[in-house]
Structures are given as structure tokens and as C-alpha cells.
Image 1 (tube, rainbow, N blue to C red):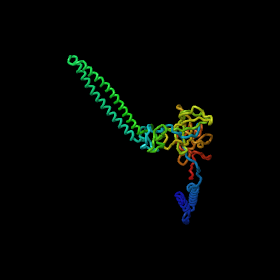
Image 2 (tube, rainbow, N blue to C red):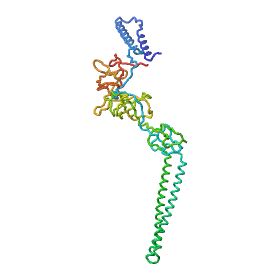
Image 3 (cartoon, one colour):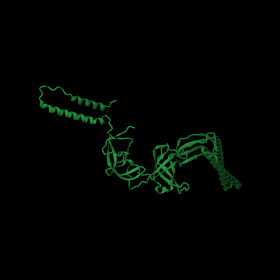
Length: 411
């Protein structure tokens, strides 16, 4: 099927050829017009020649350079060098094995594996039948103690009143002194009984509070924020006690670390706080930001390595403990000098004794002079050149020149 450009070119060619058709010359025309006709024919022939020379490009010819398998890159603000690349695995330093604080039967598990919880959220409940009975008995003993103490207070007030009356009558000489001493002795006895009743009431109240708190411990809440990782105990099983297993295991997936071994020969290039780029084997197209959180205090002589702990900054919900990871440890940032942008190493070429990159400008490239700095695994620093985000050819063919038009091959 012909393209619109090919059809148009063919039509133009037919029109040009039609104009070359010679008609019989009128007999009355003078011989002086012959040079003009010849000149016109020559002009038409020259136009046809130009049109034919442009036909290959119009019809999709191959005179445009085709940059096969060449991608368009861009000037990047990423760090320019990787100090060290190591492998490791993801860990979760903040975990909690939540068991029952008291012995009992697991009645209900409110959360399940994968649920996200916050501190204070209910995780599970124990059977409350025995504790309900104990609390009821304690509350009953407390009420009895309250009534006993109230009765002793009433009796004491009455005895003290009688003792005062007898003392006044003895003073007036109306009653004998023995009556007053008897009433005072009764009041003293009631004071002792009231003290005992108050002590019994305090003990009953303490027991009631203990049973109330014990019943409250039947509802177990999350001590930390995290995700339910395991639930090894089923409802109906006995829990609590020194040998019982956890009911729920929580893992905080918002605070993750990557553990890796640093070769002893490369320790001078790594320091705490150095930025990192972490790539997980499970998600090779993602890049996670990290930093060196801590270094072990000693080198493992068997492995000739020092264990490092890399903190993941804002990991997403797909990162899981145990995942394999590759860690690129980057140079520590310097506050006084910002990092220059970088380009792929193959994007820099030599043209006329100068370093250039080829900036994409529509369907053409423009050779732009650059001043390069140090090189690393991520590319070459541009001390002077295009701004970050500028599209460039990432692998420069040896014959690519300034202003050259190109098209990308359709693979």
C-alpha cells in the first residue's frame, strides 16, 4: 500500500512529464521563439531531476541514519558514584510476641494475619466465666464489710454518747462512777471493733479491685503498632503460664532494616549515615532509599566482614522481612557542594577534540559541549552541560554528527 507522500510525489511526476508533451508548432510562429521553448524544457527537466533526487526520502528511503536499539536517556540528578555494592536481607527489628498475662482459655481472637493494628487495639479475649464468679464473690465480701463497718460506727457513736452522759451525771453526784467506767470501756471496745471492720473493708475493696483488673486482663491489647504476622494459638486452647506460646505475633513493617556484610577491605569507604539505594530481588524495577544506620562493633574473622544495618526510609507495604536485597552504598552528601548531575558513560563522545553529548531536538540531535568530572557505576558527572531532565542519546553511534536527522528503528 502506497503512503500519501508516495502518491503525491507520483502525481507531481506525472504532471511534470505531461508538461513535456510537444504540440505541433503553428505555421505562423517565427523562428525567434525556439530558444525560449528550449529553455523552458531545460527548466522542467531540472525540476524533474530535483524531484527524483528527493524521492528516496519522501518514499521512506534509508538515507536517514537509523539508531537501532538506542534509547533516549536524560541528564540525571542521581548520585554519581557507588562506593560499594553488597547483598543482604530485610529484617524487622520491632516485633512483639503477645501472650496471655494470666492462665486461661482463649475465647476469641479479634485480629488475623495481615491485619494492621495500633497501640491499644484489642487482639484477643480469654474466657471470663471463672473470673466473673471471682469478681462477684469479691464484690459481695466488700458489701458485707461495708455493712459491718457501718454498724460498728453506729454502735460506737451511741456508746460514746452514753459515756459522756454518765460522766456528766457522775460529776453531778447523781450516778456512781462505776456506770461511767463501764460505758467508757464499751466505747473503747467498739473503737477496736470499728478499726477491725475498716481493715476488713479495705482488704475486701483491694480484692475486688484485683479481681476487676484480672478480668480486664482477659482482654489483651496491642502494645505496639504493627501487622499481625502469626496467630499460632486457636480459640479453645489453654494460654498463659511460663511455657505457653504467643497468641499473636506483631511486626512493625514501617520500621525495616537491611542487614548486609561489608568486606573488610572496603570498610574505609563506608560510614554511618551514608545514603543507600536498595533494590529487592522480588521487585527489581523499584528503588528504595536507605541510609547506613549502624555498624557492628567487630569484624567477623570467618567471613572477613563487618555487619551493617541499613535503615529503609518510608518502605511501601510490599516489603517483607526476609526478602533478598542488593544495596548500593553511595558517597556521603557534602553540605558545602551540591552533587553535579550525571549522564550514562556511553552518552559522552569525542568530537573535534571536545567532549559532547547529543541532545535530542525533535528528529535531530545537537552536539552540546560538556565538561565532565569523575565517573562511577551510575555514570559520569557533568560539571558543565545540559540541565537535569534534558533528553540525550544514551549510546552515541561513532558516526553521529551535530544536526544529523535520525529515526528510531521499530524493533
